[in-house]
Image (tube, rainbow, N blue to C red):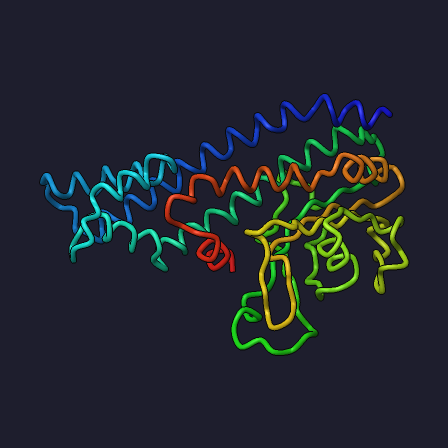
Amino acid sequence: MNAIQKYVHGLTDLHKQVDELIDSYQTAITIEVMDLYKRQINYNSINRRKIKKLSALSDALYDRKTGPILIDAVNDNKPGSIGIEIEEFLYSDKVNAVVGRIFEAYLNELNNIYKLFFLNIIGSTDPKFKLRVHFRMIESKYLTNYSSSTGIKYKPINWKTSGSDEYACEPSGLDYGDLLKESFDSGNALIFTANANQVKIGPNKRWKDFITISLKKNWNTLILANLVLPVLTFGVSVTDESGQSLLKVLELFDFSEIVSMHLDQYRSFLDTRINDISFISALT
């Protein structure tokens, strides 16, 4: 009950921190994409047409409601149209590379925010207690020429810890199976100790329990051969029983919806002309 109380009371501050983080990343992406476009159009002199291009691109990046309207307004479907040029630019590999790199940094900072939130819920004073929070994604090599139904692996995303303590080893790669698959197929967060019959390989000597969340959202779904797979997964590991109250609370209150919401918020300002396929390509 104490963990539930801390979870509920801490959610408002958690959302506020993530909102501020997303605002900073929207600004970072906009600045980098604008600078990239300036270099592309050789922005070494100011004229009316270049100012119009930059204005359209800026609105497209900042406001997903008015951005498409503005692009459509300047898009006369003729070669050289500003609208067509900007649309092609937003779909380009260069922009996707920027989006992917910054998104990985966002996930790392999101991990740190979650970690502090979770530690407050647990309230453990045991110096031996450790907590690990991480995202994994499907390895990119499986996105092309895939025909087998086995051996798909997931790798940790740009995993780092904040502060000076090295309290957690880097997450290992995982095969698609066990709780990873069960979580995605069911759409539920699954705790190891409550679902041990669905796991072939359990926690190691250091990590005694964990929760697995495979986000079942359209933008996080990939079809390979005859398989439907998640692109991103999320997990929390604890070293002893003192952290199990946290895992139970995360399952009880369906923390997967919180993670999905924070990723949807991040995606929302990319929805102007960067679609889900481009988003997935950028990640992988």
